[in-house]
Image 1 (cartoon, protein in one colour):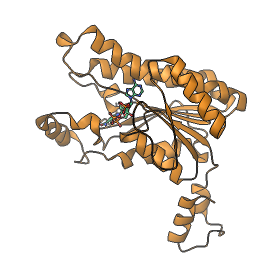
Image 2 (cartoon, rainbow, N blue to C red):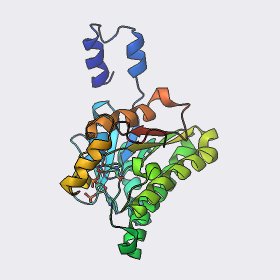
Image 3 (tube, protein in one colour):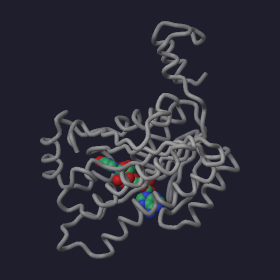
Image 4 (cartoon, rainbow, N blue to C red):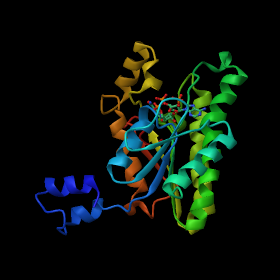
Length: 262
Ligand SMILES: NC(=O)c1ccc[n+]([C@@H]2O[C@H](COP(=O)([O-])OP(=O)(O)OC[C@H]3O[C@@H](n4cnc5c(N)ncnc54)[C@H](OP(=O)(O)O)[C@@H]3O)[C@@H](O)[C@H]2O)c1
């Protein structure tokens, strides 16, 4: 029984062997999980949660490393060979990857008239191209196992739009078409593909935004606060878990109500 489950059972006043409905809901099969960009921000928190839940967790990083208890492998999202090498190392150490979270991403914000072709293509190549490379590599093992959970980290901006982010929004809305097409390709093989669309989350990525812009965003969020990385991990864990086996092609907003209806 994993540590989180034991903690929850105790909180419910039961013993670790008791048969509560709540315990059944939280019970998960230990899986091999790979999170891209797990050395900081949202990816780090996702990896930390999976490790705390008793899964075998690896993260990709270009610098630094993932949380304690996880394996760190180097990978550059724009380079298929480095992604292939990262998967090979993880498979050798932890077994075939059963859950992949495509989280690594960048922004290069500026208005269209000032946006260079490199601003556009580098964001598309990292966010959308990187996801393609990672998921394609992950799908090999998943097809063999006839099981897989693919979770793509998009953004509220992908469907809501945002001035100064045509590159980023295009890369993030592309993930929705990607997930839905993949659901149609691989769904019958026991592989689900879903999208989590965070709103404004406090990380390095958003810390660089000017204070006035942060205030403006805060005013537009119905829940009247920015998200924390821990707000995102629950949706990702759920989609990876035993109880999400019939959910695929979905976009789960975790945005304090910012993008409702989008
Ligand atoms: N923060 C938000 O408000 C927010 C909202 C919606 C969606 N998201 C999405 O959530 C994801 C994580 O965001 P975050 O806020 O945690 O960002 P972050 O703190 O800036 O971290 C980005 C992560 O992506 C990795 N990465 C970037 N480019 C890479 C590349 N070419 N190859 C390999 N790794 C690369 C970074 O690795 P290095 O440390 O090596 O650079 C880092 O681990 C992103 O996809 C982002 O678009 C964030």
